[in-house]
Amino acid sequence: MLPRSMSSLWLGLAAATLTVLASASAAHAAYLTLGTTNTSNAATSLSGSGAPELKVVETNASNQALVGQNSSTSGSAAGVFGVTSSTGAYANGVRGVLTSTSAGSSSAAVRGMSKGTGPYSIGVWSGTPAYTASEGPLGSSAKP
Image (cartoon, rainbow, N blue to C red):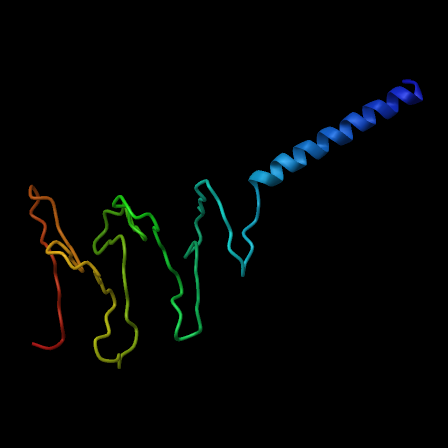
């Protein structure tokens, strides 16, 4: 059996170690706080098998439900980037659906808008590799 002073020393060291480990763990495993700005300097990943894995619902008609923004003033990285690895028919990386059967004037499921004023400013760009038999932009309408 250890003397009482030695037991107290070991107990104190164990408590200090647990405190340090808890602090280090909390620094890397913080929770997102809703209703505030959260800051992170590392990539955040969400993975699983739920459908959908992340769902954002906005009920105010004046607000966007989800915004992706790249605030850098240089480079070409997207604000929102969608990717699929599916080989199935009708697979797509990004999809927009306009569900209203009586949508207002100029409504669109997907809209691209460029505020550039130069000759190379493009609102929507579509392309396929030249070595494939794939089609470029495809559109359809119920009206002739």
